[in-house]
Amino acid sequence: MTGGRFIAETIKAKGISHVFFMDAVLRRALTEMEDLGIKRILGHSEKGIAYMADGYARALRRPAVCMAQSVGAANLAAALQESWFAYAPVVALTGRHAPNYQYRNAYQELPHEPLYASVTKFRGRVDDVAQLPHLLRQAFREATTGTSRPVHLDITGYTGDIVGAAELTASIFPEETFAKVPAFRPSPDAESISRAAAAIAASERPVILAGAGLMMSGAENALKALVEHHGIPVVMSLDAKHALPEFHPQNGGVAGTYSRSCANRTLHDADLVVFVGSDTGDMITNHWKLPRPEAQIVQIDIDPAELGRNFPDAIGVHGDPKAALERLELELPSRARAGWLRKVADYVAEWRAEAEIARSSEATPIRPERLCREISDWLPKNAMLVADTGYASHWSGTLVYLTDPAQGYLRAAGSLGWAFPASLGVQCAMPDRPVVCLTGDGGFMYHLPELETARRYGLNVITIVNNNHCLGQGRRNIDMAYEGRKGNKEEIFAYRDTDFAQIARDFDCFGVRVEKPGDLAKALDDARRSGKPAVIDVVTEFEALAPLPWTPPSGS
Image 1 (spheres, rainbow, N blue to C red):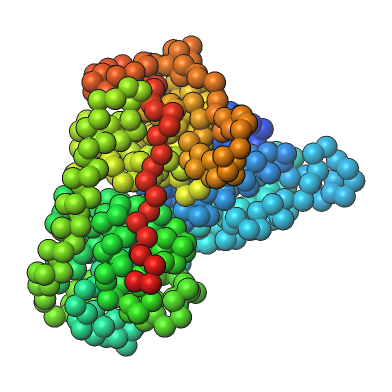
Image 2: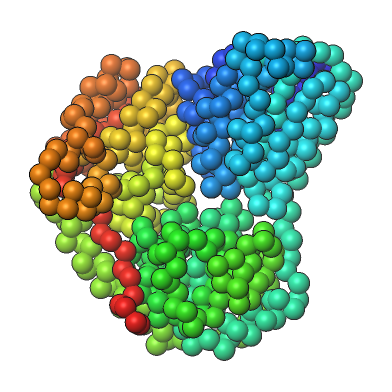
């Protein structure tokens, strides 16, 4: 077979249904993919198609593939920063000039390895077709084992087709173990489980902090069983927002900087915090102001290097989060902790009562809080909600209520503009489920041309644009920078008002502009019935700011 056929059959054997690419790359492999029934998604930018692959990978917890030619490798690498932050197993394939063209100022010649060094877990150079079987298999192993992350193969030929056209003798090994995340579920050692269980059992006010690793492990049911049997409340990072349904009595909400006050207050009051598949960085700890210094820390993570990071005295439990929670469930004695759970429930009720004031607002322009309420009330029971970074994550993470366990939530780990192309990847991964994208006008502008991609492939995502015609999250800091000075502040964060509904219609998509909160539900219904990719352009309050995170009083 040819190298192109080997690439196509390997991707097929991994159960991957779609490949995302920018021309011109591996055309022989793409031709073979058609014969094998793999859908080839041609986008409008390398970042766009990488974000599509990222959304696909996160939605299914399986590897995804994106591809770009030599000069596009730089743009592809830039996008993989998002996949690195989000632990997404994206396999990036690029073409590069053959060795006899290197160091000779060949067209678009540039070394690719440095571009990928900080955003991939594994990098391989395929200089000869004989290397392809080993390196392509290894790429999938690296992407899915341990901490899942993106990987990169640089393939000889300006478009990779020197290897793609070459003949080789090789067998296809499905290796289904490496077609999912996690590939393996290492179980923690008995000693670390016993230490963690003893600390939790002795705790009066424990809390579990669920993170992205818990979700990648598929540990939601294990978490629910543990906390219900042992009287432990749960707070979450944004990535684990839906680890428990919204109104589960032990759901303390999203913690950290993009957070609910009830979750941060719960973390502050806890005498023990169990980080499950969560990092311990500034976002989840509100710049290390939470938990309180004297709280006992337990860390459960598949990556042993994370154990003790930022909390050197932590009890470290190395293992798959699902396996670890199941072991703890067997080891822990049952305990009610009714008083502690009542206190957390009171915090949640207090936050909800305050939040409902803005969520019920009839103001025009529409308040983002009311937009989130309308999304909550309308969202289908099996929908996937995909949110951009910044305020789109802040508003949706705290104010959209996911009430059904079948609903899902994905958010950008830090790259503005990710949500729209990522939602197309999610729709490819889950063709029978409604996919809703929430972004702002600033984020939507990044990859607006992918509306054409959505229309061409029938990816009928509903995109809701929180259109305040500005980059609103920076407003507080800009006000501080001006310190009362006169000047044109808006020049550095505001945009012209743009009618995204009209732009959508120009792409032959469904588009509607909403200016009154009472019209949102009908717009959502009409969008879903349209049978097309849809854009709901919601005119929202220019001055709206998300609340600052609850922070412990000084000295507490």
